[in-house]
Image 1 (cartoon, one colour):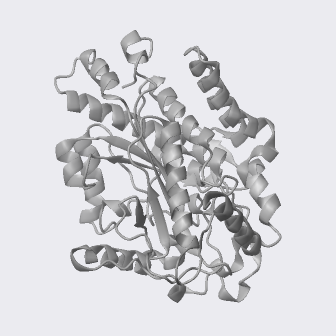
Image 2 (cartoon, rainbow, N blue to C red):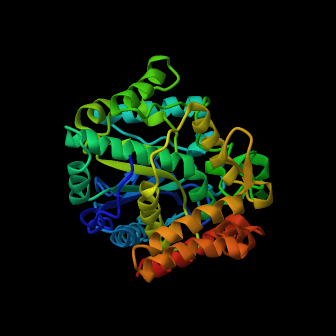
Length: 428
């Protein structure tokens, strides 16, 4: 199921929607070590903890545009920075990279401490630590949340021939989830920004040694956030989709749905559970493959957030397609490959026996997307696509290339200087 953007009533609402960003960042000391203070942001719902006590998650409210979501994140970043600069225990910084700074071992990574009725959150994190190891949980990233406008969905439903409006809505998001999964490699390739690590991430004896692993985004690579099996999801209906995830919980491969480490999630409104998703339907889609970009004080370029919105619209302009089991496995392989640093080694699989160099595959998709965006009649939107194309025409504009050049000498010490600089800019 696609969206007919030639329909003037759909086209009128296509740039509308609801947007949200979630940004994970580690709190660090001025010496480049993980902070061991308690979560300093109280019960602010926009400043939570992720896996560990020193991993802050900034959560925007629901915004009416990609730009507004970015501006909300900027304000949250400023608020967090000011708090950390004025701690009674001594100032701290938000680490601007997806990869952690110095790591003194597993004991250096305190699991988020939840008490009372929320203690189950801590127990779940202890389960993850035992299964995957704490170090992997230190990888931080950004999640992009999006929903189409209700006016657009209403118009699409009116012409769908389906009896249920929610069924139409669910089918739209299931189709989008398939397409984002298939093309998640492109998002990783365009936004990867983490080519350097400290040696202590792998061995404590190598603390202070900058390590290059030929990875542009370790968290999206084969050493990153993935399950120990290849999940195959069903997209024929929302019920089948939920049941396919539940099947892995029943067999013990997953403890709960949150353990499904996949580039895309479909979420209900309110409490995020499979039961609620099944009964209430899809409210929005979440993209989970974005690195923190240390080249921007906020952690993500506004142009990249705007691009993600346009990319989702472009995908929904394409004809409906299947995502067979072998294609799902291939999509995840492509995503992991796109996380490499040396683009000459990245080949994107297109089918059973065909593949293209990543730059060729990316140019093909972006050229098609540019034609779609040009049909909308806005040069401003075309420039958003061209911003991404420049990363292909001029390799030094790839974030990973710039970050490696800037931080390959002394990753942590230079990273602290950058964190201090951003704190000075945002904490005024």
